Image 1 (cartoon, rainbow, N blue to C red):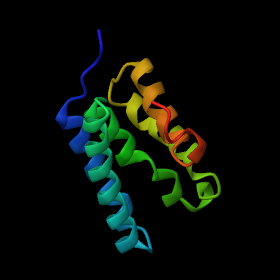
Image 2 (cartoon, rainbow, N blue to C red; image 1 turned 90 degrees about the horizontal axis):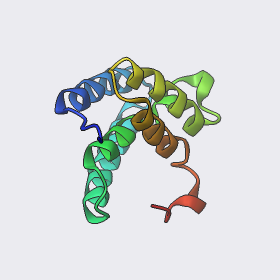
Image 3 (spheres, rainbow, N blue to C red; image 1 turned 135 degrees about the horizontal axis):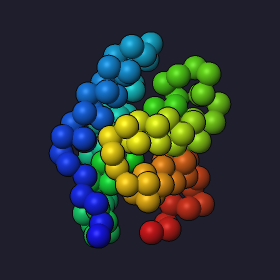
Length: 116
């Protein structure tokens, strides 16, 4: 049975990201980028008949690694690692975490953009 992600988890993740973004030197850019990615990922998930809650989680956490200076070089990979740690604390199933983190890890890989 597929796990549904509660809106509480998504809200917690959004609040977590807002704290991190507000501590960032380039706050205005990060905030605009974050909001746009969340908006468009939800719309694309709907158009492609994908799970919107999973797309939102990936969108929320996709650049978290970029917001930490020691991870900025390979931010997609770092973001996936950090996202995995965050999601494990929220009792999501490992299979779901793996799918979300794979999406995050590959979000900068333009070759895979058209893959489902």
